[in-house]
Length: 131
Image 1 (cartoon, helix red, strand yellow):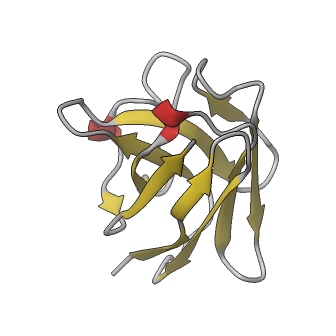
Image 2: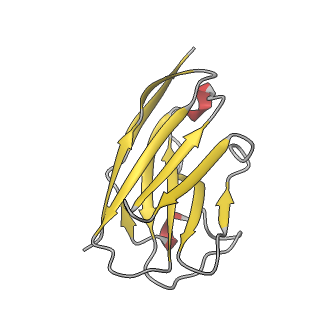
């Protein structure tokens, strides 16, 4: 059974950097996607970034609202997906979730940000932004 555990989060100063990690366990296969989503109060869950975890390709997708401020990377030895958002803005405050697809499902620019394409989710963690 796949388990995703997020860490990091908490209060962040506006203009600073936000760093989150997602450790996966129980994944016995390669070639799948991991992603970060976020959800603010009263809003739908939205995709922040997604990365292909597999050989032969390093495709990743980024939401327009972070594409100039984001770094995403995967440590294969630690099975950890990391996220860093620089120049944090008040609107970056949200619950952040890690997600993963089943093996072999390919994502496109048109669907990577849809929660329905991901089967496994972490519990989420809160990020607050202070000015």
